[in-house]
Image 1 (cartoon, rainbow, N blue to C red):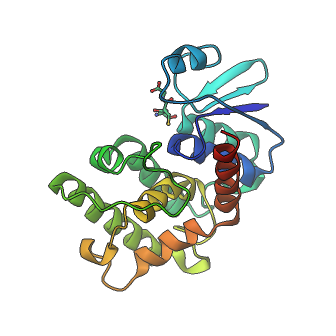
Image 2 (cartoon, protein in one colour; image 1 turned 135 degrees about the vertical axis):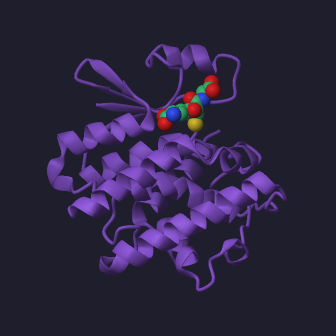
Length: 220
Ligand SMILES: N[C@@H](CCC(=O)N[C@@H](CS)C(=O)NCC(=O)O)C(=O)O
C-alpha cells in the first residue's frame, strides 16, 4: 500500500489521510510528488485519475481524495475507532468533516500554504485582513467551541478521543500558527479553541509529519 502525497511542508490535503493511516497502524509507503511544477499534473495523473494528491494505491487500484481515503480506512480498520462511537457524536463528526471538506474557501485561499508559507519552521505571516476570511475564522472557532464543549470531556481532541475530524482540522491549526491568528478576536473568549488548536499542533503524529517535512526540505 502506498500513499502518494504532495510536498509535506505545504500539502495540507495530504496531511489528513497520512494522519488517519498512521492512527490505524497501517503499513504503507509514502511517495512524494512535487507540487507547483510544470509537470505536477502529469506526474500525479500517472497514479491518480483526478490529477490531485493525496491518492492511496491499494489492492491494484487507487482511492483518491482525502475524505474518501479516510472513509476507506474506517471500513478497513473498524477497530481503530476513527469515528466517535456514540451515535450523535458520530453524526456531528461527519458533519464537521464534510463542512471542512466543502467550505472555508477564504481560509484556504487567503491562509494558503506554499513555499513561502510552510506549515513547518519559524517563519510567520500576518493574519490577512479580509471580511470573508474573518467570517470563516469566526465559524471555525464557533464549531470547535461547540463540539469541544459538548463532546470533548474524554480527551483533548474535538470529540475527546482522536477521530477523523482531528485529521481534517490539523491543517487548519497549522495555518493558524503560521498566520498568527489571535483566536480571541474571533470569539474564543475563554481559550477553548486555542487549547484545541494546540492539542492538534502537539499531537505526536503531527510532529512526526513535520519532522518528515523538515527532512524533505533539507534534502532539497
Ligand atoms: N479534495 C481533494 C483536494 C486535493 C488537492 O487539491 N490537492 C492538491 C495538493 S494539496 C493538488 O493535488 N494539487 C496539484 C495541482 O493542482 O496540480 C482532496 O481532499 O484530496
